[in-house]
Length: 436
Image (cartoon, rainbow, N blue to C red; front, side):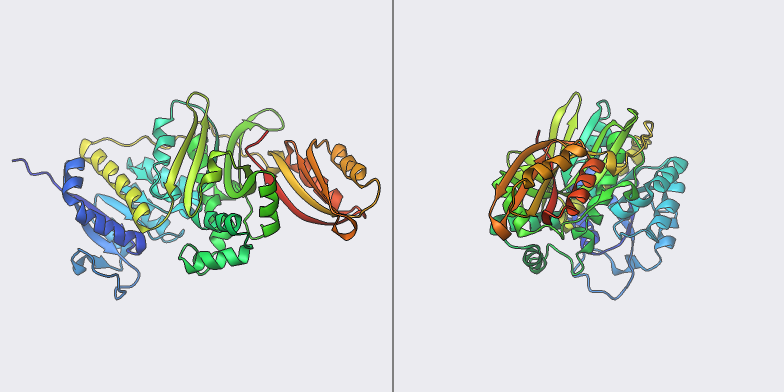
């Protein structure tokens, strides 16, 4: 019987995800050996604090160390798995591993979105694999289809719900009529929201994932700084009720599209913001803390990927899938497809993005109001799709839904409306997606 040398891992981080990776490696050891063609062994586990209670883990305590860089540099390590998060020192560890020829698996969306180029360059220099399926949508197999399965197609648009916390909050607001604060409190009590939910509710988490998706879909390097970002903290119960009246629901969407800029040149638009979508849209039924991504391609048409986008087990599942892939590549002496950035497309300014608006105005109850408001839209060449007028006296209001127009024109329209003496206030402004 031929003895095959084990593939040895350095695991950086042993929190919720890291601990689950350890458990799955132990529980599925026989199956993983059969799939890879060699045993997978943990060479060491780097942690910040040695004394932390991590529960019963099926590993020798002697494997734990606080010297992550030393572990990465060890000659007996083949693959480095990083589940710590943050920019530094994770970037230093991964660049060191990749440059030295060690394959790397990471779930670090923040690092990939800020400086993924440095990791890809290091992987090219060391002729090593860099896998990061777990960085965007947990257990959902999404990045590999974009990078490999759809590589022969031209992707035109990616629209997704990629943050479970905000999706839970907005779903709760839609189901119960609660306000944002009440829904956030429920999400926190149930463990869907962190003690500090800023990264989620302000859209930072979704923006990082949008950058990664756009980079893969459009063969261009896109960073988080390129993504227009708005959170959900300003979404009100009244907005949700208004969406319902239109047959819509509100979701925090990441939207990446490919198309011409103002000069006609090919470019990409990447944005994250709350938006109304028709209840008939496939993403409208994605509730609770689930994620889903809707991909549109020229030949394949419309594809949707759906599942649990976060949590220890789903994320560990994606990490394990990447470990199997890089381990098999090492045994076969091959590399995965390298970074594809041949298109090198520029990112369009948000002002050039074509969107639709839903605008709710509190207005004076007098003759000529509607004509004056319509004149402002016409001045900025924004076409009105529908107008709904209701109430009298101090309760008079107008709800205007536009056709698609450049974001800059819509923003200028709203700004001029604010200055009209007949407009007491602008109650809300929301974008509308997924319709004509």
